[in-house]
Length: 127
Image (tube, rainbow, N blue to C red; front, side, top):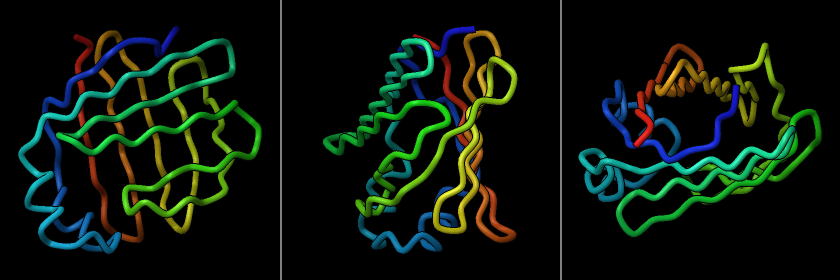
């Protein structure tokens, strides 16, 4: 199953409390909470390029499954991480106490981030 495509955010749960816990300033949280972000994923075998555009903010990460890479977090900080693939439709990584799971089902991507007892969930549809 290929992740390649463009996806538009449909819904999100716990955005504000999760972003506060990450340390994002309130003005960025307020600006970002109602914007329908667009995620573009290009998959070439085990190599991925992920670009998330939220208003004027663009976050881009490239990684190869199973290899250490630098991932830019929402705060702008870059951290080392290894992304693993589970089955053929799930990408999993842990960085700075945060677990990230991105699951593709048909035309829907569910991205769940967990930090402690706080869970942030985003659902995006292929456009």
